[in-house]
Amino acid sequence: MSRRILVVEDDANTAGYILKGLREAGYTVEHVVDGRDAFHLASQSNFDAIVMDRMIPGLDGLAVTKALRAADVRTPILVLSALAHLDERVRGLRAGGDDYLTKPFGFAELVARLDNLMSRGPARVVETALSCGDLSLDLLTRKVTRGGQALDLLPRELKLLEYFLRHKDHVVTRTMLLDDVWDYRFDPHTSLIDTHISRLRKKIDQGFERPLLHTVRGAGYRFSESA
Image 1 (cartoon, helix red, strand yellow):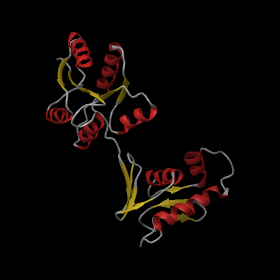
Image 2: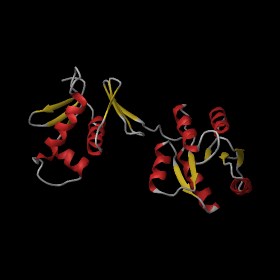
Image 3: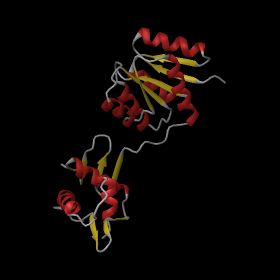
Image 4: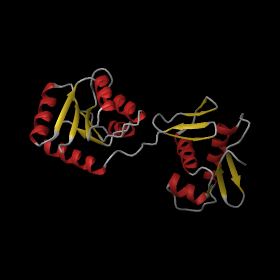
């Protein structure tokens, strides 16, 4: 049975190049040029993969990708873009894309990437947020809220908070923090940890009824709703 590919591309020349090549290679291909049409078709039909241009009318490619993942559509998505900067590639993957291919590209590479994506099966569920009690960290926007109140954290504080949330309810040692948050390999008794823990604790716990960041004497720290 032929693989079904949805191509979302508004540039006529690029779309023609992709459609012709995929059809000649034996794929069944459908094509739309608008983001809203792409979301409707991809959420209503079963495709084996989606080729998603980054810049399309209606909703852009990343917005469509995010919306599909939010709707629990797990079809593998290959994002196409003329934007080759690292930050743009990261944005595409964080939006829920499974791979990112920059223009101009060779058709053989496009097919190889699609075949690789389809061989993996449906995309895994992408984690977009971490939480503990009424505190939440949005992994896409890097925004932190507690009780509906926005908290302003510095980059290192954000990294530290994310680590605690990923190890929620477990004891985290000072050595673990140095290795995984700072990538340092030296005396775990350094005051570096104490300084950052103190700053983070003030921002996330001060003024709230229940503390989340607890010190475990002789062991380290635990991020938990319970004391």
